[in-house]
Length: 186
Image (cartoon, rainbow, N blue to C red; front, side, top):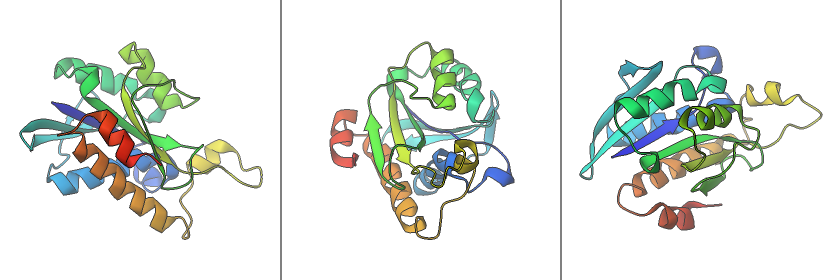
């Protein structure tokens, strides 16, 4: 069993923002795996299917980024999904737009969505794909930056990163996460 979670904010005003890149990767997986996100539970939108002999869940918490754990903790408990079978995808300010950093565990690193997950799961020992969104320039406040949209120049890198992140998730269905990290990091 595998659970892929993309972090973001619900609503059309947030749809193409940097903060919603996790949602974009889940949308890509939904399309690639033909798993529609049509069910709701625990303040989240999800879909499930069997891919390569593995039960797969795709989840978008609809609690807003800072409360993501309120959806994820109960969801995992209800479906009896072990933390080692989960991968969370979220935005990373410290990485260039479209670049990926895969990690088997780690701290919240100042990311409020991750802080919420750690609080609700009681561990930070879970797999993650940090998706680069870059850093603000010209003293732009971080909240304004993450809720802004990618520039035209960044778009090709971002699309390439979305596709690469989806392929990394798909690879985790049949490979160890260590192998996936070795192939898709950077």
